[in-house]
Image (tube, helix red, strand yellow):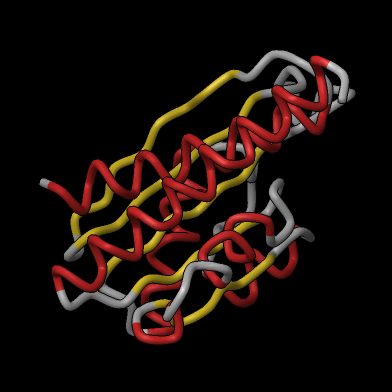
Length: 165
């Protein structure tokens, strides 16, 4: 196995551990979790669904890759979708649709090209826990696959941090 393959496996295992931590927190808090994804295309929800007994706390996800889906289903206003406003609407929308107490939303450009004037690797993440929404902008360097893994990892870490508050 090459060094790059080993790093990818280690990073992937780290993301899986963080997903397991989300499950532990959800069970401990008696909370249900949902996800709204764009740039990550369902990868975060797949991580959560793979956690043992996730059906006890994981309600589901909306993968809204196309802008019109973000607007029509999640309530994102017309305008840039790589923005604080868009991920805030996405996380609030998925909570409304599913009844989840905790949720995470991601929108961004994994690359290799810029999008909406944002450089490749720019992502916005929003988390809602007990109706308290927080968001952050992140820039990830690397190839699109590296950006996606880093985004998955940070999104799940951010959700755990807010669930622990």
